[in-house]
Length: 428
Image (cartoon, rainbow, N blue to C red; front, side):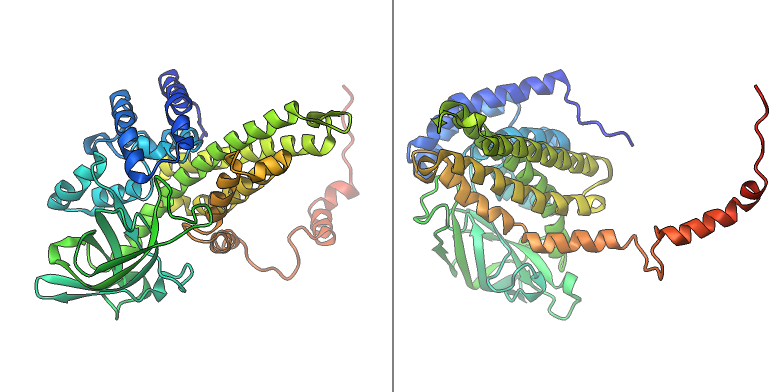
């Protein structure tokens, strides 16, 4: 199959509009020290403009209120939105709401869609995704949160960690063990839990990039579900299906993360390059120093290579589906996270002490980027999964396939007659 990452002029124009919209309308909000309520109030009219433009909730199909772009176009849009952490919310495709909407669209009943999906897509409610548990690393087989059936209700007991939107979510999608005797991949189910259900206790967490928990968009927390009761009809999908659903949610979601990282990298690169041509030390501009030139060249190459790898993965998902692109999905996650760190690190370094202060956005971007190597599965796990899949195509050999003496012996045997009795070419 031919690779085609081209963008038709009509969609390219939409991307241009989105870039200008970020610079003119969203960037100014970054420096206002807004709390969550104030940000949502100022974002509301911007969200209406995005809806009027036809770019709202672009991760979903048209029948669900989205645009049906596919992963490739969606990736290109996320590259633009990644330049500001406020932008995905304004465009209705912020985590974890975008992934949760996809889950409900995929596995929800008609009643569940009416109650939760419609207001979620409209931006009237927020949601949380309660999956991880402290101390279990990236191994969901160790999760201990349980949900037991009691008549017409599920009773949920357990503790979840690093839950996005924990204290702000009107809905929690909770992964809990419902089939303790099943095989490891069929023990858990997903449950739809109202955020105000009795028995939910949330402790907001300070993060490296947000120690005070004051970010206008993101909030993370530790959640205790202490005998939380919900109707039996709040089961999302089938019993024991959570692992499969989670994989379908997280795979394409990594495309969105990685393309947003490219947007972060491009903004950091712009700051790096601007500083290089603006500051002079030791008799000449920074742009003339070989080390700085190396930073510029290496950053540009790393950004472009990561972008192409991510777009190829998005194209693969559009062509053959996420399960068949698991190797590429895992590869872009750990590769993109490292490039993100490296580009930001160079941008901070070239600004010196200025880059270390809050007078530049780099220090906050740098601290938030460190999480990229952890969330959606730590990089080490993705490297292991990629290596294992690639190595399946190879078999052990007693003698290396490319062993020159062995190859020479085989070639001599094959061409023995021709070498012993060379044919004389006829004269022209």
